[in-house]
Length: 293
Image (cartoon, rainbow, N blue to C red; front, side, top):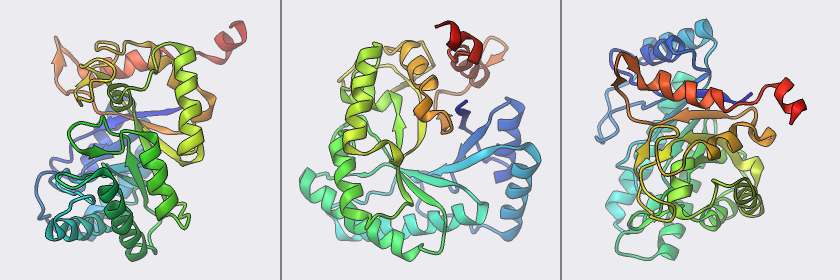
């Protein structure tokens, strides 16, 4: 069974995100380790780390991870922004280490006014430095697939393949997080089963399935190939339920953490996180049903 969870708020303390995840019956949780739209970060105390780790142990939540700041751009052609991005990402890895997180998800970067080729090379240099400066940490770096909006890199599997092959004098700490909304918006067909299987074969030939460490489970407000990143509730966007049925019943991904990043709030008196989790769980076939099919 895959591990299902969501991105949760750290308001009031990092540990509170864990207890909120447990309240929904989640298996895993994603957080920010700092304000995601600011460079500066409030220092993390030993007590912060201890409370978070204790909450993880108490609740049984597994594979906690973080999403990095949206300000970080390892592909930036501007040297000052690139340097600031590297320093900030190193700090985020160290903060994740203090909390005992499994990985930090990061958007590969945006080449802005340079070129995709130059942007990819800048990311490689940045990742190598970050991996070297945090080599004592077990925290992994999970490159997220993107929708390809604007000059964002990472929307083609081949781009992620390049980053992994050029960066990892094969550091096992470098992996990939597949966002279902993003790959759909990027143009990959995943609705029909035969198309989903073809897309996974493509992923295996390029990135390699062993590098897939996590999923973001989001439906898409925009059509396939739109290259627009807009998340929708599960089964209520352009994707429908079938792509989630394929992913959640794919034995190759059965032990991976899968985090919702769908909009928060309520539908009537029921919270959307509960509704989305229920929708996902209904797509999972039991062992008995698998034998019948």
